[in-house]
Amino acid sequence: MEHVLIHSFFDSIKLLPFLFVTYLVMELLQRATGENTHKVIQNAGKVGPIWGSLCGAFPQCGFSAAASYFYVGRVITLGTLISVYMSTSDEMLPILISEKVAGTVILKILLTKVVIGMISGFVIEFFFGWLGKRNKMPKDFVVHNSTSCNCKHGHGIINGAFFHSIQVWFFVFLVSIGIGFAIHFIGEDTISLIFSDIPVLGEVIAGLVGLIPNCGSSVVITQLYLDGIIGVGPMMSGLLVSAGVGLLVLFKENHHFKENVLIAAILYLVSIGWGVLFDVSGITF
Image 1 (cartoon, rainbow, N blue to C red):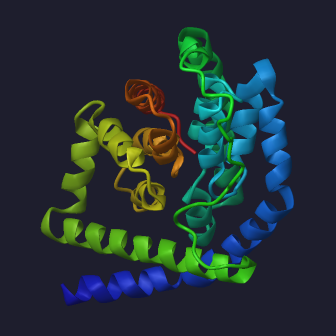
Image 2 (cartoon, rainbow, N blue to C red):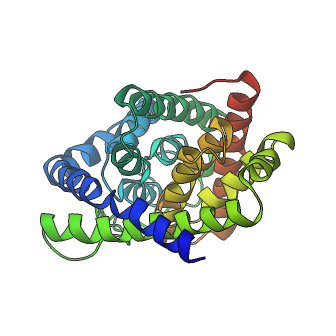
């Protein structure tokens, strides 16, 4: 136990400087482009899934939350909302950068999520677009333009980057401890076989983790992939369904519970489907 704790701490603490620099840059980008991305998504119209997936991939915390507000106010369509959810990087990008993953690999993953977000958005709009055309909001409903995220604390660029880095580092530390204990008591080969030998199980479990409306879900999925515990299929399923706090905002602000459940189910099942497709086709990054 002591060995696992010490090893996990020193392995994860190395990421802290990289996380801080990454979040500092992301804070600056968010301050500079936040309002512009909102205007783009609001004026997207029929090509909403294209702009939704592109804007969703942009590294700014809380954009999926803003998209949820836009959907509740019927400013954007369901297809656009789903495209934002599926392309949202959340904490995946900082973890990949901090772990010094090759830039080409990071770019491939990001572009893949963008393309999948576009395709899925248009398909979902075609079959389920009627969801966004009913349950109209009252005329006095206020669409919030906030990009705030419940995983960010403090004020100012440096404080925001610092506290965000500490929180994500803590998640990484906890995940590392969990993986360490699992490998010690169960064995890495046994764990890998559970995800690889039983069809679709890996995608189903990763998708459930991704549904957790918290910054930590994408940390867990990304770290499991980097540690070789899960493959590309489960990783894609988990990251595609992981929309940050987007779903949390949707359930809080949209007072139509059945509609919210249906949207979450669509997001989950489509994400699993893409993950299985990657698994069957043997695509790697």
